Image (cartoon, rainbow, N blue to C red; front, side):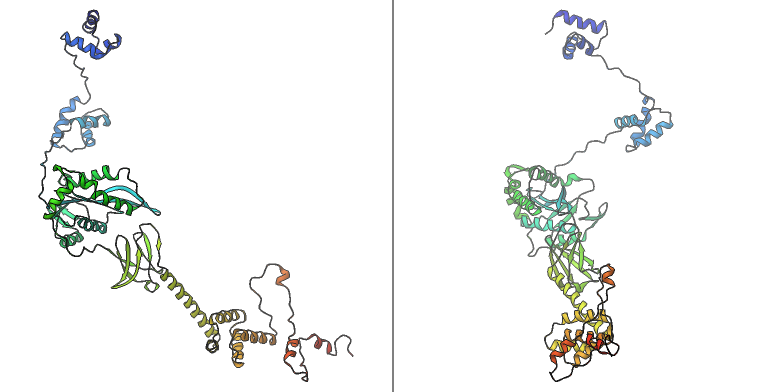
Amino acid sequence: MIGRALAAEILRLHHAEGWPVGTIATQLRLHHGTVRRVLRQAAVPPAAPAVRAMLVDPYRAFIVQTLEKYPSLRASRLYTMVRERGYPGAPDHFRAIVARLRPRPAAEAYLRLRTLRGEQGQVDWAFFGKLRVGRTLRPLMAFVMVLSYSRMSFLRFYLNAAMGNFLRGHIQAFAFFESCPRVLLYDNLKSAVLERSGDAIHFNPRLLELAAHYHFQPRPVAPARGNEKGRVERAIRYVRDAFFAARAYRDLDDLNAQALAWCNGQAADRPCPEDRQRSVREVFAEERAQLLGLPENPFPSDERLDVEVGKTPYVRFDLNDYSVPHRFVQRTLSVLASEHSVRIVDGDELIATHARSFDSAAQIEDPTHIEALASHKHAARAHRAQDRLHHSAPSAGALFLRAGSRGAHLGSLTRGLLRLLDSHGGQALERAIQAALGEDAAHLGAVRHFIDQHARAAALAPPLAVALPADPRVREISVRPHSLRDYDQLARSPDEAPPDDPHSPSCDNDGPDAPGGA
């Protein structure tokens, strides 16, 4: 309460001085509500706010008439029209004026939709961020199906919203319910509707195959009419708030295990929105008798893709490479992919099976495929080496036959003969092989002995290794071969006279021109 003197001062300042309420409250250190109460008790009407003239006022009627005729006309186009008629204001302020003057559509009232038991289910995808798998990020998509009568819900997460996962979501939802509704509602997503013109609808053929298998009717809602499938929209919001928020999980399998437990637990035990006295589980038990039964076999939902195999024995599927046997290179094969496996077929023949990877740029290999390719390459190299030997030294074939019959290691023989071919040439190797066969010595040592013997007889310099150091003392050294006469004496009888060896030092000194001779 304030005194009479203060109340009189408030009235004087307002009437005589024309002070507004805010100025009186500030100067007298009062609350503005107190000042208004004093003025109201004195039957003083509140001051009307001052109306300022605006630049748009002369054009207001034109703007209103134009918007009534063209309610969706853009403010930028309307500004151009008003500008041509002399409006001097700025476009930013004009947009705010148009927003206030634009007619608002009348609020639409909606009927509360009710369904019969077992009649309808609703399906939709929901995006829940991204999940890291190896070196890549995959979109985490939730497939949600809810029965319209009981509100029993099914939830499962996938790493994309492709058609294969769309079909798997239906199959796993029907298995969870152990039944199927008669009608399923969708919005106009591509997995359900490929094209639409009014009531003319082109359904996805795979969805029609699924519907024929389980005997339900797919029904897309009208465009921009999300309220027609509001039950699944509210179910998705419930999943975000009651399940996914602050949820910890190791991987996708762990998340789906938790989602299945949640559907069987908390989601089923919540009160049914249509009957708060009963739980969703109890209403679903009542609805179950009206749902359709399931066929004996589930619908085949594997993704099928024809792929080209290049020069390397791998097929590319979903950003990753999977190995195949090397004999299928440069062929067209088919990939059959499930949620957990990738099978590769050639017609009706299954040629490879791998665990599916959702990584990126990964190579998923079967060790037997790689080992078979390595063995094939090794055998091809050996075959090419033998072809080269047979072409350069035709007698090599007979040498291999005789050596193989005696249990010799043909790989070592091939490598040794190739080295001799590279160092001495084809003609020298052919003569040495013929000499070895003539002595019935079908092994590498005999060939090497005869090739060296022929080189000495022709006074050829021994072949040098290619990888010599750059030191000239090594590259320019001259090595005189030692006489083998001493070794020949080991196999000679004591009465046999030793032959002359032109390379022997003693022969060099026995001639008439030797130092100290006659």
